[in-house]
Length: 335
Image 1 (spheres, one colour):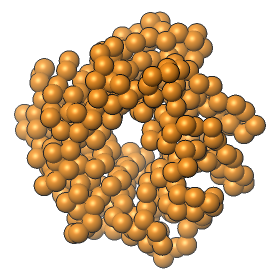
Image 2 (image 1 turned 60 degrees about the vertical axis):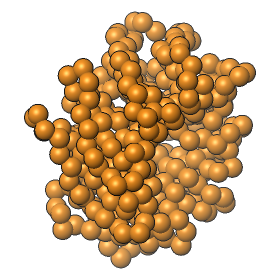
Image 3 (image 1 turned 180 degrees about the vertical axis):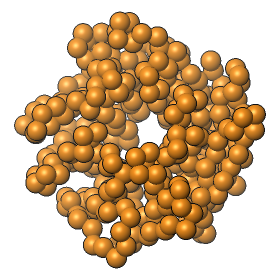
Image 4 (image 1 turned 45 degrees about the horizontal axis):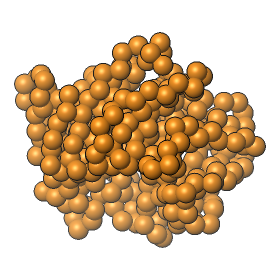
């Protein structure tokens, strides 16, 4: 199924019920609905970031209007609830935790935290520089904020604290925890990743990329991590106590005339998904080495990519506003 939205696709996600949602540059959120879609007018400007709401119902978006909005489908109706507003600021990054019920977002040099179950809850963590990325740990208790000079770790519910800073020179633009909570990985402006083992803060360089890494995802029950930023998808091993320390990454699906710009993975299987800057999408099984084309048509660069929790469907969007949903039955046998 293909949609034409005529607006940049900022995010394409599945909520917990398996409903696809598209967050767009025109400020709307579109939800799939009975063969078509329904529209939520979420923002006065562009949607800049999105995450699945902690409840699993609908998505939370941040916009250039300074608002954080929860959009969802309830029965036959759509609904939009204002979660927070920081006037005069762009909300460029959003994260949410189903485990703790918390929602986090950035506003310039601040990271804000709200509780989806308590409208009065508010935490604001100030930084010296702009916050360029954020992520919750698997339990939703700690918040990682990426910025210049490293990644800061905050206890998400505690006021008046000093963060633990995982230092590394340079500008960090994104952060992600491994699903077991043992490792923290950041993406940097300098076309490389940097990682830390949280038990002892031992750090690791993860370089060799020709371009900035704008997308990374864990899959195969957390044993593997796939990233964009190269002519193929780059896969790092995370099994064992040392994760990728002392190990080499593998590059799969190498193409001379295109770059991988977005990635996703199947949580339960060793299957990585890659979206290219020429609009194509493919999947690779890391055990068999088989690569299968999932979207053969060329187009604008893929800007959003996600796999449903059951591994049965893929949702994508591109920079020109084209988007779609691809059914991928029996991925474990098909690949």
